[in-house]
Length: 198
Image 1: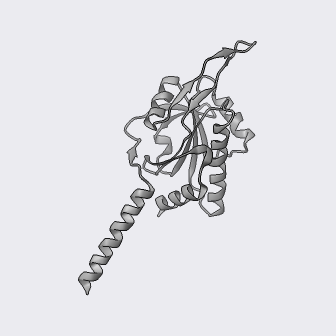
Image 2 (image 1 turned 60 degrees about the vertical axis):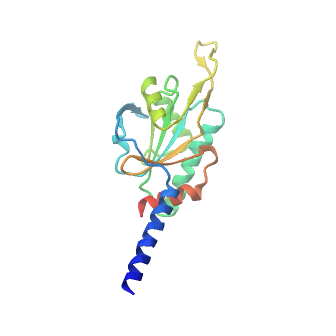
Image 3 (image 1 turned 60 degrees about the horizontal axis):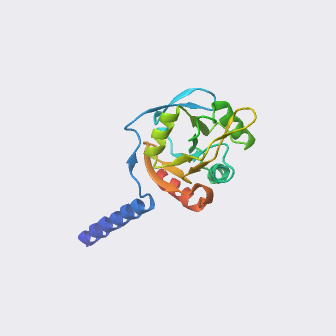
C-alpha cells in the first residue's frame, strides 16, 4: 500500500512538473550579460540587475508607434490593474524602447504620464542604439526602421516594423514565456504569474 502511495505521489509530481514546463515553455537565463540603460528619470540602470528579485512583465515598444505599441502598453497597464484586484501588487512592469534615437527619457516619461502609468511598479528604458539592439536580440525581438523622411524642422520621421511582444521574466532573471503584446490574453498571463509565485 505504501509503495502504491509513493508511486502515485511521484507520478503526480512528475505530471505537475511537466504541466508547469508546458505552461512556461522558456528557460532562457538573461543574467549572463549586462546592459547599461537609462530610465525615464535619466538615471543609469543595469539590466538585468534592475529586474532581479521580482517577477517582471516586459513590453517592447516605441512611442511614435500608431497601433501595436499603444495596445501593448495598455495591455500591460490592464494586467497590472487586474493583478492588483487579485491582491498581487509585487510584479514589476518594464517598457523597453527599441527607438532610442527619438525615445529619450523625457519622451518616455511623457508617454507614461499621458497613460496614467505609476512609476511605483513601472520603468521605461532606453539607451545607446547598439546596446538596445543587442538586448532586443537576446529576447528575439526584431525592429526594422522604414524609410526615413525629415519634417520642416529637420526632425527625422519614420515608422518601425517590429515584433509584437510582451515577455514574462521570473525573479531570477530567466525568460519564461512570450506573448503577443497587442492581443494579450489576460487570464493566461495572470495564471502564468501566479504559477511563478507558487
